[in-house]
Image (cartoon, rainbow, N blue to C red):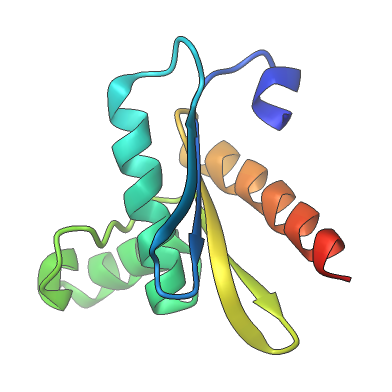
Length: 119
């Protein structure tokens, strides 16, 4: 696992295309909140079919509240990455516990692993 290879801790979440949780791993030593944050990032990424950080940037640039969608699970922090297969979003991967940039980078590694398993 990439987090372990980097000697870091955190949580990793995987969701289906609807944002429903398929799997969640919180590593030993990871903060309790990382599990909830990863779950919300993965929900956001699947539902919007875009990286979770895109929502945060759009909200900041547009001056509207992230909770505009009416669901408190939407989260605009970096770290959620959608999985596109044959032109369709089939789910997403999210990481929490590091910087947003590192979370997203590791989530992308997860996306690549999923895509390799589908081919």
